[in-house]
Length: 251
Image 1: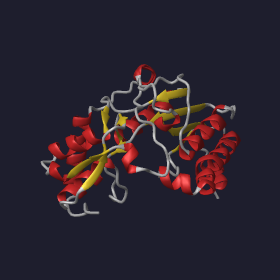
Image 2 (image 1 turned 120 degrees about the horizontal axis):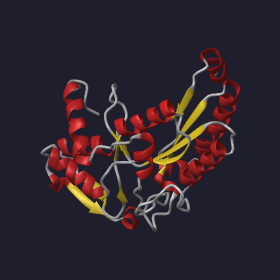
Image 3 (image 1 turned 135 degrees about the vertical axis):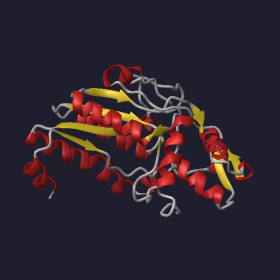
């Protein structure tokens, strides 16, 4: 089916945003993870060869172990989880495909989709605190949250400019997940007393996470004209989008 669609329409570029991204679920369902994150990429690269399409693959900061962040593109990888390994394996498939390819690694994507069916750390925070639910939030993992529109723009620019290679794409600001949740609460005027800090060790998740990632994004700025929003600016974009979807927005 996929091959038939591609041969019929012959796109110049395919941007693969599909993946199994629940890190703990990947650890517990390794075969499913491998099918979605590795085997599917191998299939898509093979399909791209038949139509000579540029292939853009999304990857993750989790390919690093978090010992020396923030990271640049040529830093040594060391995945800590099956999810992270699956994404690194898919990178290698793309790199060895003999296609025109771009790999874009990114970090914690947030934003609003039209049908409001997919959550993220910002929407989860807003919903939980509006409902006065106590939430446990990790205090010792550092990330650079990325507005969905910024990531989309980087993908589009890679396709338009036909830029190939590996790029790091993320938001401007490094912060702990706890700080991102606290800033979201402040921005939306929500009660922070419901936020309970918890350490990675205390949470005891099924899959290991890197403690400090973050990206050096100079290459994307130079080659893709990447201009990410600050986290505060991104929250303003989210607020504007939610106001347009007031009636629909409630998970």
